[in-house]
Image 1 (cartoon, rainbow, N blue to C red):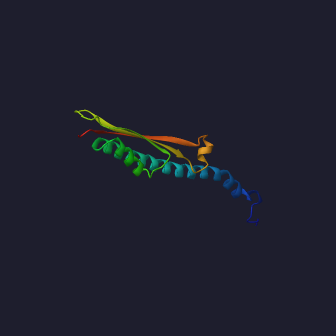
Image 2: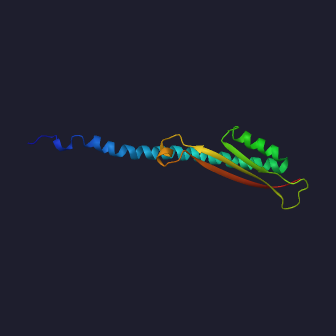
Image 3: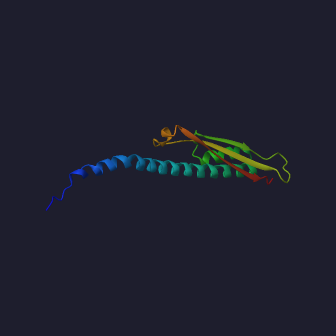
Length: 129
């Protein structure tokens, strides 16, 4: 009878692990950053909606305040609010555009050559005055 151990298979698991580990880590990093980016996009979309609504109902400064409140007063957020005219007529709209500079927390951003990505959300609400 021969021996149960095959000398040619020694270390095969370590080599396979070394080959697959970078791929698995890349997928995990992509999932983490994609989830964070999706969450940030949802937050700035909601902030733009709140800003446009406040600009349509109250004024432009209230729209900016709502955007700041919805985004936690983040310095990475840049709102652009256009309010309603003094005497709005049918068809006048208030709008809000929110830009956010998203930064990656995993090495994925450096691997693709980007330190960050600018996310943008816009919203339009009819004037009701």
